[in-house]
Image (cartoon, rainbow, N blue to C red):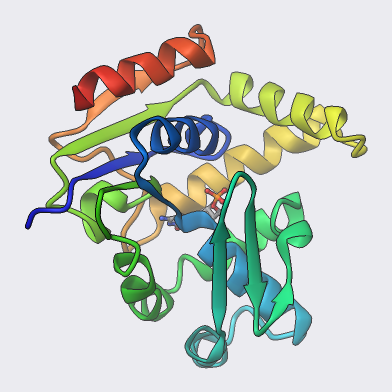
Length: 218
Ligand code: C5P
């Protein structure tokens, strides 16, 4: 039986998470937030004060980590039995994640963990290489983006609303740096799949983006 997969790839802050969760909920499908796997590895490596330049060590940490995902209304992630959800959303974790994610062997080790999410009745997978590398067979693919300025402003607003101190200039710089790292890396760089629907959400409401994605499925 063919398990339907919808992939949503794009740069940081494009709204992939919010759109993917809403679409998965609407369809009653499973949801893979692949960034949270790289973020969990970053948390594990930071906890051990590992040298991020030591690929063999980071690979060993990736192999050893036991991750559990509770995909209820809010995603809860446990690393070796400890709830690390609170640390996953931090900007520092996202930046560290993009460093470990550039290591080819790390990506290889984490590949199967991502493929395991493909279960009936279907999967919405959000990340950078979902449509190009992890689920190339997916029938429905979206590349969701927005201008760097718009993405930085959205991230800034989110942080301020959560009561977290934030600096717009710093966020803009970090987003550009993360885009560069994600697009220029040799293994599975952020790229638009040939068969993906390209959506630039800079001037779109969230509801309009969700509708466009759902239209693709129907
Ligand atoms: O999407 P999110 O911001 O949570 O991802 C954090 C980092 O993990 C990204 O900047 C990227 O470097 C990496 N990542 C990746 N491939 C994915 C998902 C995330 O390389 N499929």
